[in-house]
Structure formats: C-alpha cells, structure tokens
Amino acid sequence: MIQQTKRTNKRSLRLFRFLALPIFLFAFSPFSLCNAQEVVDKMVATVNASVTDCGSTCLITYSDLLWQLALQPDTPLSNPSSADLNRALNLVIDQRLILQEAEKLPSIAPTATEVTAARNELVKAFASPGDFQQRLQIVGLTADKLDEILEQRVRIEKYLDFRFRNFVVINDKEIADYYKDVYVPRLRARSPGQIIPTLPEARAAIEQTLTESKIETDTNAFLDTTRERAEIVILNPV
Image 1: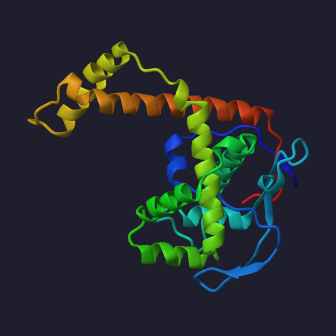
Image 2: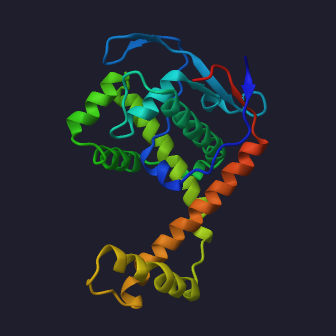
Image 3: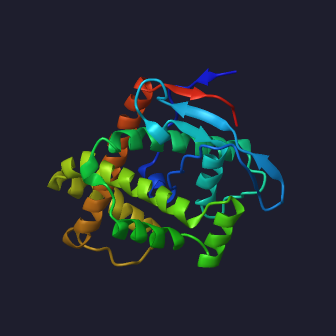
C-alpha cells in the first residue's frame, strides 16, 4: 500500500558530515550480502517524483539504504533491522530534498579535489582502510559509485554553507553567556581541578560551537518546511 509521509523528527546537522548521500540505482539487480543471501533490489520511496524535474534524486531504493548503512562505522550490514533501515530512509529523504535544491546552483558544484578530500576524511571514521573497503564490497559499492556519493555529499555541504553559514552572526553577549553558563560548568564537571581557559582563550571554540548550533537549527527548520511542501511517497515499507 502506498503511504505518503510529511514529517519526521528533528535531524542533526552533524549526521550530514558522516552519512554519505546514496546513489540512484536504476536497475533491479541482485547482489550478495556477507552472509551470501541473495537480495533483489526494490523501490522504497519517491521524493517529489511528480512535482519537479528531480532526475535521479527522485527514487530511493533498498540499495540506497544499504549503502547509507555501509558508510556508517560499526553499523551491522548483515540482516539490518527495520529501525536501522528506517533511520537510513529518513536521512536519505532529507539528503534528497537538500540535493534537489542544491542542484539549482551550478556555482557550488564540487571539484575533484574536494571529492578526494571527502573520501580521505570518510575513511578516517573507520577502524582501518581495509575495514572501509570490506564494507563497500559487502554492499556492492564500487569506487565510481562511491565518488558519485561523495560528490553529492560535498554538494549538500556547500549548499548548507551557502544558504546558512554565510548569514550566521554570533555576538559578544552570546559568547559571554555561553562561556559562563555552559563552557565553564561543563569543563569543571568533566575535568575537576583543570585550569579553565579564559574567555579570550576560549572565544574561537565557543564561536564555532554556537555557529554550528545555529546552522543545525536553521537546517532543521528548512527541512521541516521542505518536507511539508514535498511529495514523499513510501512504496515499500522497510
């Protein structure tokens, strides 16, 4: 039964840093998981398929979800749970919504250097390069497809920076209040007896923290509004 979804819980911007955008898979082709079980790919959901020229970002398949999970360190890939698959689905939907907006801005197209840097950073999140490669092999994620995923992820991050980071303003009062109410009490609780950095010493770190927090809040609000307007159809529940 086709089900349409409009909203989801709040998402964290930090998730976009480590969960790569999956690639679109046109064919219904079999592939093997590590337990040698044959899985036939299937359509899971569509995002704005009938309301916009979204191209390859319209359709989400089961492979997309497995690829999403594979790029999350320490996430089981054999017989993934419904909860894991649905978390991946919500993330993919959010990513597709942002990507559809990002593709309207050709000026933020990622460079080859940026894609390479994203790949190197992603590998660091895993126990070893070998562990990373093994996870890609388990879900049939080739080097070319991984590069496409990373290109899309970099595009998403550049769009978020363009749309939100450039407009974030952190004033002196916000920094001072955070230092007094959060920074100092948290540091004392974590490391009793440690010398507390002064406000000038901690200023840069606090400003960065507050900036990321505002971007996260703005991104969540943007996604909620975008989901309200979007046509999201679940074809096959996971």
